[in-house]
Image 1: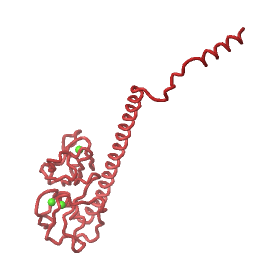
Image 2: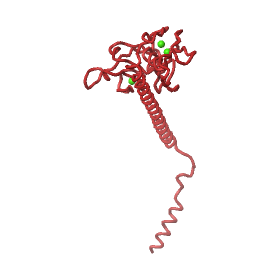
Image 3: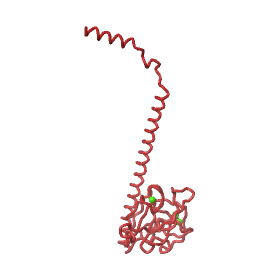
Image 4: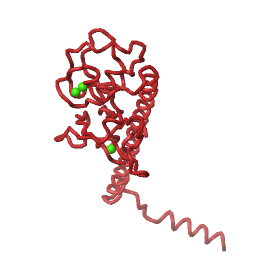
Length: 222
Ligand SMILES: [Ca+2]
Ligand SMILES: [Ca+2]
Ligand SMILES: [Ca+2]
């Protein structure tokens, strides 16, 4: 009896029409698959975008750490940090853009500092494309006023305490607003104390991921 029931059930299943006989997909199935693929694609783009940005942040932090070591050596020899303007280095420039960053580079590579180490080339650019007639560089023939730059290729702003409160003009390689590539930058204050951050040393500031100085994602030495 039981056997007959089982056999009967098998026969009924065999007789049932095959639902997937067409071998295709319904429109809803295709749309669902496309939606899932789209979502996976967005997640992948987001993930790799984040990885890339984190790589730039790490590169910037490494450049700033390298600059701190070079500045400490400079201070040991010269008794203070490199100036953040070109005048004390007796360099004449065509413009006052990116001056703090250029003065830092120029001081670290000056003829008057032959024992200095070079900033790694990958941390350098000349975003405003300027040069000088002054033969300031310990390598003969270098006339470009290079800047030290962050992972995005934007100049790292540099301020010494005598310039805290004064504005520097910085031309960005990767500006937040392509129609407005120049920014006015000042040294930053400590949110804890309200006084200048790194009050008795110096400030190195990268605009960070958003390409804007003075926002939370800035990468700094303080
Ligand atoms: Ca300049
Ligand atoms: Ca320059
Ligand atoms: Ca920022």
